[in-house]
Length: 455
Ligand SMILES: Nc1nc2c(ncn2[C@@H]2O[C@H](COP(=O)(O)OP(=O)(O)OP(=O)(O)O)[C@@H](O)[C@H]2O)c(=O)[nH]1
Ligand SMILES: [Mg+2]
Image (cartoon, rainbow, N blue to C red; front, side):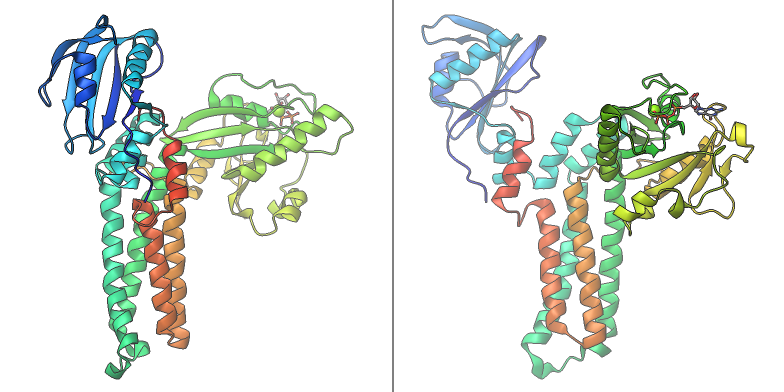
């Protein structure tokens, strides 16, 4: 458990800048001295009290509304005082300073949420969902963050954990009481329960992947030889002329990025320098940066000028890629551009693997390509019933699924009940990390410190 110290903490809860209203929030065990000091009288719990906010000499810093939530019925589970004053930084800073002079400490980023978590007001996935809601960049992402914040994701995780516990009880009992002579290998019920568990985890994982895509989008890197039409494609997808396009090979050197939403799927498109050996120092740096982006990509479009080659094979057209990543062609798609010149038909190229023909100039072949990208990202194209999920949630779900698959195999092949029991134990720990039941302080610290101050 995180160290939940007893300091009273204070922070400005509203965004930096000017606004009609600004909120300073205090949280601690006992706030009566603060209320007395700043407001000069008692205020009724959970009622808006119009008052003057006073400095140490008794003069008015600001006038506004005070809201007092005595413990444990507050966001943090401690006593909370909200001072709603005018939204100017000088006023709000003065209010914070006043609280500090009365003994409060300025809160670390995410410390209010951290206390809410430590006081069982919400679990970790819900706390993360609040941060994701604040950061949401589309209506769909916001809706799914609200669902997670309300506990829908956690509920599914808890159901999986419960299902797992039932199987563990059975397996552990069979190991501890061998005289009962349960023959694991003949135990069809155990196998069917394990199969059900693993398909239930897969279903949650699939939804979580959708949620994570809605939140973070897909990073799509445009790579290829110089002059293939990468920058033209970026401009065309983004609907503006961000990138310089010329007929000179080696035009792009810097990495260019555009964020767009295509049929509901957020895409972070990255345009890179054309890949070739070069003596030009600037271009060579561009090529190095291009490789860095390729390594970090979710999907890569390798763009080829179709007037230069006969229809190329995915493996032979970019040997450097396969030399570096012999096993990872799943996120690579071959795009044959300039079919207005070569005369190829737009769309999926018959007989070729993951190869699509387009003309950026004439805007042909785009629909099939976009459709393919959505499918290979596993995006279902709607946000109904989705919840927001983070990378770390996906990793935990994937790990849990792998452990169960291994456990089932060990049971089937070797009748190894003990090994299955251990795999199930580990799998349960993985899932519990999502809701924060078994999460190391180190990880918790990192998660909460990524939140904004005052949250
Ligand atoms: N006919 C035709 N020309 C195209 C098409 N797409 C791009 N071009 C032209 O091809 C040339 C190179 O395009 P760019 O988009 O700059 O190519 P790039 O891959 O970004 O090139 P580098 O930045 O040098 O690596 C330009 O003259 C474009 O107008 C297309 O679909 N059809
Ligand atoms: Mg370019």
